[in-house]
Image (cartoon, rainbow, N blue to C red; front, side, top):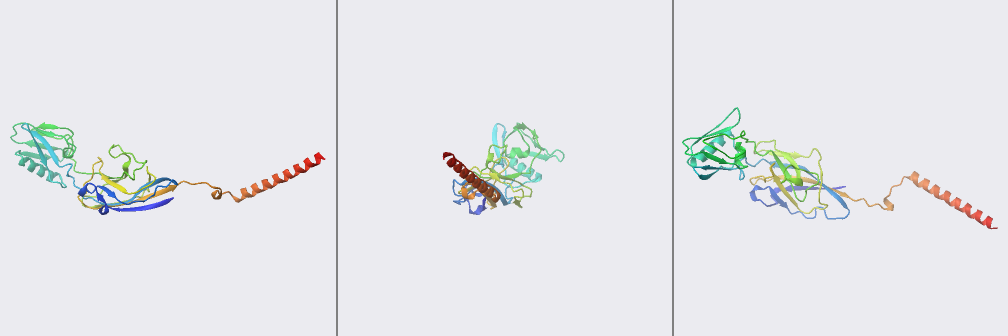
Length: 289
């Protein structure tokens, strides 16, 4: 078995999705050449250093759409990290910009929000989406002049980073998400606050058998638990992979290892067979006379 150590710095990559910095292509040809002697390859994420630079509210989670008095409006929040108090302030100001006065409260017991609209001339209908509405606790479109989401507000944000790759994809990973499939090389839980750094080391020595038996160039995607690209906000990160190369064992006469005792026994048997053959020849000659 042979090994290859591959170290990647996102700064050296072609950035497919710009400052999101989570869909990358590394031009590294001939890492493992195609060879009929190779049985298979295995890959492992050996280490990673990833800054927690993404925001809770980002380009995918910053809009709230509602219908009021037969007209549709969209609020766009400022991208960033929020707590309960700052989220309420931001939402209140955005509704006010659209001419709606709302008092928003957060229950300290249930974690549920309450949107109470003052002097509304019609119900306000919140249109469900899987971005901001999901964060606020909505599971469906809801209308009224006093609106309460179905679930508590969730400001935890992304829970894990899935390190994915097409070129490194394996037969050994499975996911409940169709968008992730078997392209996940490793899944890293996020256990540090925003603006800190995740340091990952492969203590379990986990290797997956790759689909391909050769490797040239590497693509990398950083996806959240929902299969969405993480917005790294232009901040760089590093990854290290280990590739294990398994070759086919070609058997020849020279590389067959036979114990010496068996070789001696084999020679002895051959010599005895020759003696027996000689005796048979003598008997045949005597019988002819």
